Image (cartoon, rainbow, N blue to C red; front, side, top):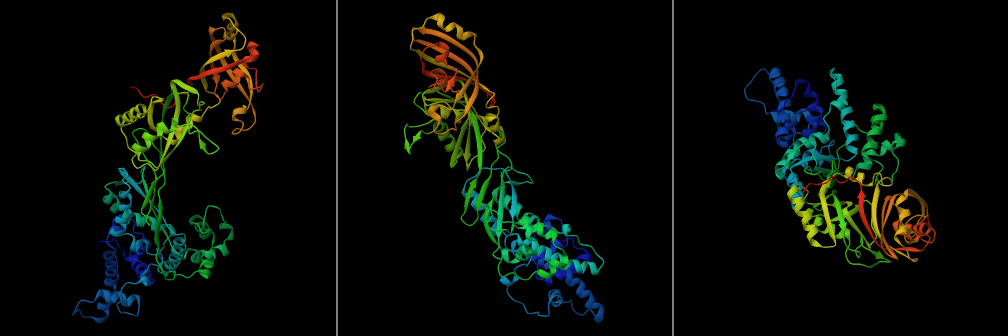
Length: 540
C-alpha cells in the first residue's frame, strides 16, 4: 500500500491529467520510501487511480443520496482527468513528459536482465556494487516545468511544495531497480562500493528542450572540446537556478508537452571510487548496454625486481621502428600478471631504470604495473605468492620479490623524493695508465663530491639539454690489477655513473678521469641498491 495523504489528491489528479507516469506522481507527492517505487508499475498506477476514485465516488454518493451499486472507480478517475473516456492501448503518446520513460520502461526485469547479462558475460568477480545513473540534461528542464505546474495548484490550496522536496528521478530509478540488479548478480547493493555499475540514458530532443536556456542564460553555456553538446547537466542546472519562474513560463510550456520518443539506454560508465589495496580490492568498469561490452579501468600491483642479464632491456628496445632485442623486464613481469588478472593490457613504471647491460642486484628496483581492464581482481596472500613464484620460474634473467596489490596513490611514493633518494653501484673500471694500490687510496677520503652533468650524448635524443647538479656521497675502490679495479659508489638518484667514469667528452665535471689523471672507462656496472622503502617488504 502507498502511504498517500489527503493533501496528495490534487497533486495526483493534476499530474495524471498532464500525462505523468505513476512513479513521477509518487516523486511529486514526496514519497520517500524506496519500497513504493519497487512495486510493479501497473500496481502503482492502479492504486493511484483507486485513491482518486475513492474521493470521486464519495462525492457522487453524497450528491445522489443512494448506494445501489458500487461506482466504477476507474471510469470515475478517467472522467476526472479527461472528457474522453474511451480506452486506448498504450502507445508512444503515453510516454511520461517528465522522466521521458525512464521510470516507466527501464525498471522492469527485462532491463535488469540486460544489465546483468552484460556483466555476467565478462565474468567479473565482485561481492558488492553501487548503481550510478546518468540522465539526459532536459529532465531537469521538464522537472522544473512540472514543478511550476503543480506549484500553483498547491499554492491555491494553501499548501507548500518545495522543489527540493521532490524525489529525484535518479533516486527513484535506483530504488526501483538496484535491488533487482543486485539479486540477479548475486551481489550486495551498497551506498558505497568499490564496484560501481553506471547506467546512462539519452534522448533525441535534448537540445530542443534546452535551447531556450542558451538564449536566456548564455553565460551558462560555453563550448568545450570534450563535450559533444553545450547542454550538459551542470550547465542546465546552473541556468535553471538563474532564470525566474515567469521568464521560464514565457519560454517553456507548463506542464511540459508530450515527447515524441522515450529515452534510450546508452553506454554506461562506472566510476572508480577506490583502487586496489592488499586484501581490499576494487575496480572500475564501463558497461555498454547497446554492444554488450564491459571494461574495467585499472588496478595496480607492485614489487621489486632483480635483473641478472646484461642483455635484457627494462622495456622493449625499439630503434627506428625495429626491435633490437627479444624480451624485456616489463614483459617478463607483466605476462603472468596479465594472465592471472585476465587484463587487456598494462603500463609499467619503476623507480628509475638501468641500461640494457647493467644488472640490478641487492633487494632490487621498485616497480608498479597498472593492469588495464582486469576481469579478476581479488587475490589472497597465497595466490599472490604463487603468482610471484610463477614470474620467477618463467626466466632466469629476472626475479621478483615483495609482489603485492597497492593503491594508485601509493605508487606516487615510488616517484616521491626522486632527487633525494640514494643508489649504490658497483663498477669494473679500466685505466689507461698502469696503477697500484696506493693510486686508489685518495678515493676513500672523498665524501659528498658535487658534480655537474650536462645531458649525456647517449640520451640527448630523448632528454632535454640541461646541466644537472648531482652528489656522490661516498667512493671506495678495490685494486684488481695494474689496469683494473672495482669502484663502489653511493650517489644521489639520477646520477649518470658511466659519464662520471669516462667524462663524456668533458660533459661531466669533475669526472674519474680528472681525479685519477688518466683515461678511465667502465666495463661492467651493477646497481647494488635503490634506497627507497617502497613497497613494504613482504615476510617470507
